[in-house]
Image (cartoon, rainbow, N blue to C red):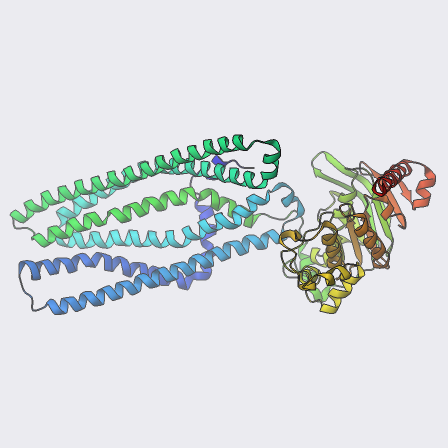
Amino acid sequence: MQNFQEEDKPSKVSFSIWKKLFSILKSLKKEIIILIILATTIAILDALINVLNVYAIENFIEGRNYHLLPAFIVINVIYAIFFGLNVWLFIKKGSIIEARVNYSIRKEAFANLQKLSFDYFDVTPQGWIMARMTSDSKRLSNIISWTLLDLVWSVLFMIFTMVVLFIYSVKLALIVLAAIPIMFLIAILFRKRILKSHRLSRKYNSMATAKYSEAFLGAKTTKTLVIEEDNLNEFNEVTNDLRKATIKAISISSLFSSILLIVTYIIVGIVMYQGSDLIIKGIIELPILFLFIRATISFFDPVMMLTQIMSSMQQAQASAERIIGLIETKPSIEDSAEVIEKYGDILNPKKENFKDIKGDVEFRNIKFEYKKDETILNNFNLKIKAGSKVALVGHTGSGKTTLVNLLARFYEPTGGEILIDNINYQDMSQSYLHSQIGYVLQTPHLFSTTIYENIRYGKLEATKEEIINAAKMVGVHDFIMTLEKGYDTHVGEGGNLLSMGQKQLISFARALIRNPKILLLDEATSSIDSKSEEIITKATKTILNNRTSLVVAHRLSTIVDSDLIVMLRMGEIIEMGTHEELLNLRGEYFELYKNQFFQEHENMIIDNI
């Protein structure tokens, strides 16, 4: 995982990355054109205000000619209304573009996440993905929308203002023009120090946030270890570093603004000196000098804005690379063009071409490795007849879950092929295959909604009767009806308002409501209590009828009635047969079953004491 220094470290701007991001704006072409027109209008109005001021000084202050004052007031009122209207539209359109860009970035990233395979999530921390979907996308949408508009306004304002200045006095305009690069140079030099100081401040802020999180999540552990004082001291050290870094960052930013203002007023002083000389010589009038003084001061804001744009793009380069990397990451498992043509892809399935499968499964000469040179399965062969219940047993690391995940095509074999009804399952789309499979995980995950909706996720078009029937099949209906709101009861975040057994039973119902032809149970009863296990064991005898099932078993007592039990060791089949046949072999399965049998009976005796 990236550390705090790397996460916010600005890198050299890559225009290819930004080109891909700005391509998102193609769908907003109309709004962008309107915004550029608004920015141009505002820049022109900003520049023309100086002309109006010159006119006012010449006619109303020096000339004392007041007969045009009412018209001038009306013009200024119209100018103010028109300017305000443009600014309002500018902000409104800019906000809409920011929201739509943020939506587009997140939509593309989230859509790609739906396509990515299991191996991506195996190596990518959830926090990293969440940061890309939230802070990175927000930062980039802000930069793509507002930074582009600020850039247009700043450049156009400086151009229009310089045009006005050159019209009134070329000599003074050249002085102002020569001063602009000096202001930019100072801004660029200070911006590097400001970036460094703010980056350090963010680093300590992240560390402080991490300390907060640890304190909340580990509160009970802290109490049991009696380390409250140590935690407080560590937190004080981090927050003290944060305070110092923040003060330093603010001080450098303040110093930068002050120096830039000083330079600005030095230039103003030079303009006043030269302008006064031109006034004495009768080349320009006093209102023209006022125009140049005000224009010189007004260059402070666009210079600050342009340097901020440069640093923002530099600082956001890492975010841009990460979000583009997420959007462009290719899944390791992809359907062929021919398969997509027939069955559609994951996000656009052609369900009308999906046909029910029979359920014959064959692992033929399978080779698989999660990492190179770390072989899990090698030349593995196994045939499973449609409608039969097959249990996979063995110690941790024997390959049980790997076989289940391969059959579900969450991973693909690196050698050999998996056949379903004598058809290579790579000739079926992933969405087609998954529509025929029900999968119950060892650790169930429920969505933060109602019991009804959690079951319905298995089949979105399911009727209420189908949902209730699925719940009855797994034996969870009676429990649900004891709740005040029944099926409308919210399960809490991740289902934390329910027990592990209750969550597992609901996940069973969710898998079964689609009436899958193949049912995969990955140690689905290992984390539930004995009472819930009895309910599930009883229900599965009915549920598994006429379905091909592959059961990864932790408790051997739950799979004694299997049609076939496969004992695995290091990815190889060492024993295979029915429960009785394997017991008669008196091999590894016999020893494993015997040890579990004695342990369970010992626990029962202890519970009854």
